[in-house]
Amino acid sequence: MKSAKLAKILENWDRFKTKFPHMDEPFSKRNWGSDLHSVCSYQGKMKPALAHHLIDTFSVEGDIVLDPFSGSGTIPFEAAINGRSAFGLDIGVLATSLSNAKLKKHNKDEVLKIIEMLDDFIRNNKPQDKSISDSKEVAFNKTIPEYFHEDTFEEVLLAREFFLKHNDPESENWSLVFACMLHILHGNRPYALSRNSHPITPYAPTGEFIYKNVIEKLTNKVNKSLEAQEILNLRPSKCFLADILSEWPEEIQNVDAIITSPPFFDSTKFYMTNWMRYWFCGWNKQDFQENPKSFVEVMQKKNFDVYDFIFKKSYERLVANGIAVFHLGHSDKCDMAKSLIPFAEKYFDILDVFTESVEHCEKHGIKDKGSVKGHQYLVLMKK
Image (cartoon, rainbow, N blue to C red; front, side):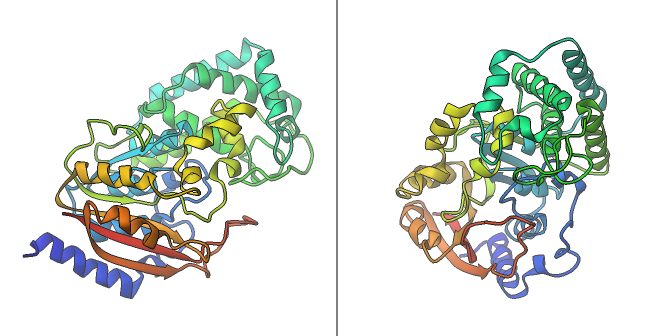
């Protein structure tokens, strides 16, 4: 017999599939939602309105929600500001920091103290030889020095050294400052430290070499983010720096709903579209060759066997009759839902598979976003 909660969830899901509420105003507006969603631009980020309605559809206030592919934290953040406690997992310092910049409550004095420490470090140091060599070896669209005025470039190198020395992506205050620093690295607006490029992926820069002060730009961005958080009522939440293919943190227990969006099979390489931010997180030329081998994004190109472990861990952390929703990409090359069902049904009842066309969606100025034509929803219930 269905519980009242499950019956309500299924009723909500039928309504979602019919009404597509994330496409109606005001949710259809490009910048709908909290300004903190934009703490750092991020390729492949789920639209906040979609995350909001998935949270609303598959959970209730007071629930614990988990996203084991947290990315920029859109799903857990929407859960945390809508009466749920949220957990996230991500293998990268980049994503973990962005998630916690949204999920954690920040202390303004402590945040500004970190910026003061960074300012002092920049004023009293010179970039190390290794920092300079790393910046010249990591070159995709252009070399990193070609993106900045020489004085700005020196400050960026020192900022990278500072953050690598004080690395704490699960910290509420460090994560905010670091996420804001990642955001201002490159872009096509006055906030950006780079020459004219793109805010999501650093296309080859154009225009004059103009000096931009790192501390000034960073402080402005941090203050705006602090103001955005002040008006929110955040439930206690956290993103863990953890490999989804290793043992999950013990703190994650009794989860009511898993709502997540794994890397799409046929999308662009995330670590390449975010190459400058990965460099700032400490990657060198060799890291770009070796680190992605452990990413689900890369491993699933060979086969989907890695998902057996993911579904097993999801099963273990969910409450009885808990719901898991996997938001997937569908293309001519791959039907992800069909590929994952043989692994999922070992642990879950398959409640539904639904595909929504996204060929109409805007590309935000990105030239190539892969050949994804549909978003699939694989809806599961713990056996």
